[in-house]
Every structure is written in structure tokens, then in C-alpha cells.
Length: 293
Length: 303
Image 1 (cartoon, rainbow over the protein chains, first blue to last red):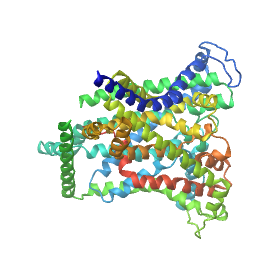
Image 2: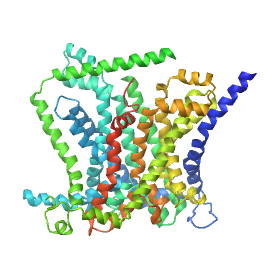
Image 3: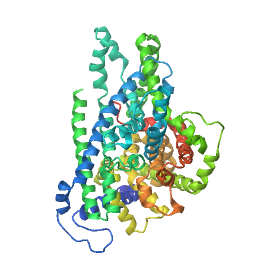
Image 4: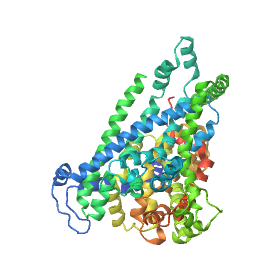
């Protein structure tokens, strides 16, 4: 009997260790999720006390709204290119740093430095790079390259991709590098004995052994890019026109400046849903590959 | 349990000898012409990554005259610190710097203790509640708080937490806790249960066991979490710009934003502010670099 009550007391004490965190987490993230869901069925303007219920009208409007379509289009393009470019470059740099070149530590540090800067600063920095610094190269080299990528509707995406890749490639590179360095070297030795070429070794040993790293990097880059906002605030402000308005930025403008809280919440919920679906599908597909490997 | 700790030890020794072996094989590899090509390629890449950083330092020391007339790539003529002075005055830098430091330090400290406690309880206690708690916390990793800034703000407003220090700290805790519990739980296997059992026999309460035995053993995990979270919170813009609008409570990123939007005129001051804002996080990173990489790669490496 006594032992039983002692155990119960212990379990209770263990619970008290969890509860404060759980409470803050529930109030700060879980309840907002449900609130957003509730408000998404109203056309609340954020000021009035009553929140008129309008059913799924907000969600229907999402499909016909040109602003929403454009914002999704931009966000998806940004995400796709980021996922492709960042993975390729990160892996490329990681492989290069895993070879026998000199000064690996210096390269590693330099490539990683940009991650320490906030995305807001990165946006501003590249804005100035494109408008003030790089044009000076034209005078120096006697060329006539147009570096004002962020000011033009057609090139703003590539400008932002350069800035974003500059900031994050080093981060993902470190993950690939750690994964590369954990591959047991006897695997390569065995392959060498069997007469496998370097390229075959890469395809049949390195790539499969990197599977967990691929999962982390692909999911991380995709979900990170879908949430892009800070970078745009300082680099383009969503412009020129609406050419670089991301979903989060659209939520901001509709809800805060446009006073359409209900509609903004519907946008939020759609973004959360899409992020969840994309992440879950990616994890499922990539984990399957991991098991096969 | 003992078997497990032995197993962990043997694993460590195994991986150590692996590393040594690898080093030896690397030494044996020759510096061929393809390695030279890689070297050139990496040098070019490094140049691309380094130039903007150097530009920040370069511009932070340029005078206004140099900014408009001089060549953008030229170095400043004198070691000029007036921009830093201007940044201090214009941005109310002492205040915003202290604010950012305060928000980051307090929320990270609380997060580390809370996440450690939750992860420990989840690892040690039996029962459905604890299993549920783990899933509940970790699901939060998949919920992007950036997409939910509106309702988070509304909740904060209803609890009259907006424009208060407490509010922004609680908000950072709420949005960081999922990741924290996840990392801490993954480190929990490094805490040997024998010490805790000995403490229990000596009559230590759960709380005392946590603070005087478990927490010190979790130091590497704490370092990992500290650097990962500080880096996020220090650089946060979206939440800080929503939650605090009064001048006294502004963070560095929010204060700097006002310099960025003032079109062009005075951006050498902005660059000086950037240098100041990056320094603390750069120093922290240099001290805890090892742990940062460990935190990033949790789950990326098989086995």
C-alpha cells in the first residue's frame, strides 16, 4: 500500500514538471490554432465585439482571389527553386569539404557565417549589394550587366533566391558534411576492392548513406521557404507591384492593413494545412527511401 | 541499464577509433589535379560568401562623402567610427540592445529548464499521460507559428500581454518549446539512471534530483539548445514587430528595420548597426560551435 502511494506521489511530481511548459505551449500555440480555425468562418474585422459567422465563404473566396493565387504562385516558385538549389549546392560544398583539399576549416566557417545574420538584415544587405555594390563591378570590368535584380518583376525571384541561398547553403552543408563524415570508411574500401569507380561509389554508397540527411534538409528547406517573410520585408517589401508577395506577407497585409481578420485566418489555416501535408508526404516518401537504403 | 551504458561507451570508443582511422586514410590520399580544381572551386565559392560580409564592415566605416562619391568597393580612407556613434543615438541602441539581450536570455534560460524537466519526466515516468505529452509537444514542430501570428497576437492581446516584456518572453517560450523537448528527449539516453536511483534512496525529492543531478548531466544538451534557440530568438523579426510597438520595449531587429526603410539616405549607419547586432550572436556561436552542429544534425546521421 505504502509503496503504491509513494509511486503515485512520484507520478504526480513528474506531472508537475511537465505541466507549466504544457500550459504555456497550449495557450501560446495550440489555442491560437483553434482560434484561427474558428475565426476563419467569420468576417471579423478585428475590432468589433461580434464576429459574424459566414460559413465557408472565406475558403471559397480563397480560390477566386487573384492576390492569393499570385502569392501562392510566388511562394511555390520560391520554395521549389530553393529546395533544388540549396540541396545541390549544400551537397556539392559538403563533398568538396570532405575531400583532401587544404584549409577546410576556413571554408566551413566562411560558408556558415551568413546563417548568423537575421533574414531581415540579409534582405537589406542584398538590396544594397544589387543596387550599390555590384554595379561598380561594371565600371571595373568594363561590362554592362544589369545587377538591379530586385527592381524588376521578372528578375526579383532570382535576386531573392541568390540572397536566400547565400544565407542558408552553409547551414545545410554542415548537415550533409556531418552525415558524410559518419559513413564508415570500410564501405568504400570494400567497394574499391570490388573495383567500383568513384562515381559508382558515390551513387551506391554515399547517396544511400546520406538518406537521413536528405530527409532533414529537404523537409527543412521546403517548410522554411514556404514561411518566408522577414527576407522580403527588407529586400523588396513584396514588390515591385505584388511580384514578390509571399503568403505570410499577404496574411499580414490583409489582416493588419486590410482589417480582414477572418479572411486572414482562413489564409493562415490554409497555409498550416499545406505545410503539414507537404511535410508529412515528404517525410513519408523519404523515410521509405531510407528503409530501402 | 548497465548494459546500455556499456554499449554506449563501446560505441563511443568505436566511433573514436573510426575517426582516427579516417584521419589516417585522408592523409594517405594524394593531392591530385582534381583536388586542385576543387580547391579553386571552393575558393571562388568562399569569395562569394565572404564578400557581402566584408561589405558590411567596409560600409559601416564609410563617411557620407565616401558613400556617395567614392567607389563602392574602395576601402574607407580612415578608421571612422562615427557611424557607430550615430547608430547608438538614432536607434536608441542601448535600450534595444538590452531588450533583445533580456528577451533572449530569459526565454532561453526558462526554455532550457522547462524542456529539460519535461523531457526527463517523459523519459522516466510511466503512464499514458507522459506518452501523450511527448506526442503533444512534438506535434508542435510541425505547426508553423509564423503562419499563426494573428491568433497568437489576439490571445496575447486578450490576456493584455502585448507590449509587455512578460508577453514576448512567454510567446517565445510557447513557440520554442516543441523543438526544445524534442532535442532534450533525444539527449536523455545519456543520463544514467543509477545516479537518480541512488539519490532516491538517499531521500531526494523529484525536484531536487532534477536540479542537482539531472540538470548538470544535461549540460551538452543545454548548450545545444541554448545556441539553437538564442540564434532564433535574437534574429526574430515577425513576432517582435507584432508584440512590442512601444519604443522602450523594441528589439534590435525591429529598431533596425526603421533604418532599412528610410530609403537610401543614411545606410552606412544601418551597416554599423548590423555589425553591432551580429557581434553577440557571433561570439556565442564561436563559444558553442561544437554544440550547434550537434543540435543541427540530430537525426541526420544514421545509428
